[in-house]
Image (cartoon, rainbow, N blue to C red; front, top):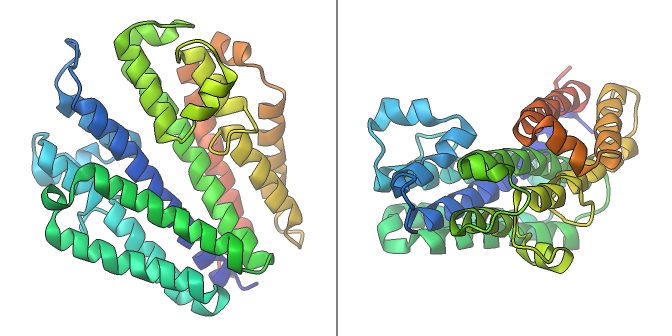
Length: 316
């Protein structure tokens, strides 16, 4: 497969996954901002969390000045001038899909094109009329529909593999960043193995719901959500679809299935990452410090993404 085609397929899926992840992030921050803050600051502090996670706080301040709830929501959801907004991600995904129109199925194209047309209509209405929670659910629903169309209609060839590869690289990075942000937001209480305070409960429950893992948590653990259990679930459980371990296994298997020798550096990094997660216990992570461990692992995912780009996506 030509590197340009592989790149468009890869980034199409990354941008779609990123839009969904942003919607999940924004939904949980918006929901928590509406709750009593228990002396921890106003809801704006919670709404600013996506800015910190995505590194766009400085860009926001340059364009909009002080934090303002309505401007914050628009900046992340529908701002065409913000390359990190959901609107921009869906536009970029649609552009990549158009470039490889002949390599994806009609169902996939119709879904992504309709999504782009719909969000343009939503942007004209504005979030105040459409509704923030409704918008986030719509983004997740459109992402699910595209994923279902992909699974149900495309051949299991290299095009399918690069689409899946982009999804899991993006998802792994998002899970790490969301977990780190929520751990930092919980403050000193986050270090507790089991924290019975209402603040911690809603912080951890909101994170689990944002990653569609709340039901999995209640099935596996009896205790109220705490740092230890949530971290173990989202980092080391291979049977939880949005966990780091699940993403790592998929990436390792996909890269191993791609032909050619150029991908060996990326394959080696993926195998090392998967082995590290496979043979790491949650006690080891907590002993090192969850925040320290997460901030050490995030660059590894970025390094793997760079290796994938050099091996498969960089034009000769």
